[in-house]
Length: 343
Image 1 (spheres, rainbow, N blue to C red):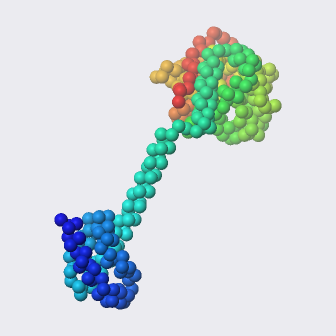
Image 2: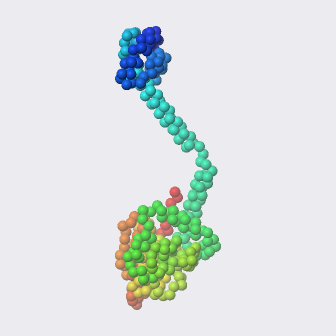
Image 3: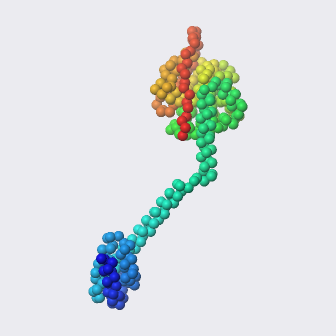
């Protein structure tokens, strides 16, 4: 119905064109409005504006058409100008929608396209590295210290693979236990001699002023001593602090603690940080009370413990000044392997 009306007013618009060309520009100039009269009064453009504008602007164009037969009405130009504004706004909205649709198409296209060869290779390398780390990690938890030493002697490069995976895992922890141990050492005298059992990248030695003996299964640093941690080669009663930071790995972990007891001076400190799940009976871990009891039977006195962190626990012991005259076989609890999940 409305389209017929537009066609019917073609002649009316043409009649108005001559009159408005003379009268409206002066009127619009006085109002300071820039207006393309030829565009506004072109019936073709008016039709196009009508079909492309939202409903709110269509009403203005209908009003312009309604007064088209009134040859002396300056309202024609004013209403047509309003229609022009609506059409321009409509065009802007249409361009925005077109740009948005194009972005959506590009996004869908990028999702559907296969990954580039470089990104694919990087992902595959990461997956292989993660799988290799889990294999080595499980091996270290389920063999003795001597077997682990021989394992890395056969292929020292595996040690780098393991520690790269280890650092990737640690990066996901809110707080790392090695930082707590470093903080503890920095709060004590720098004259204390330290033995770091399972030092990794020797971060403790690099972060404190103390003399630190750093031990691990492989030495990629001249300051790290490669050894089985049950046999460090240190003199008896020669160090003030012994550290095990997530390093009580292996079936014979009690032998590592016995070596720490041997090399510590009387009243020397034993610091142990361990994955919390290994000492949580609710998740299949050992009873921490039994673990503390076994360490004490070895010749230590408990000083404090910290279970506040959700990822790890901390134990602080001191070596007894006089060894107990009554020695009995210690019933060490089994510490379950810490197996990282596939991601």
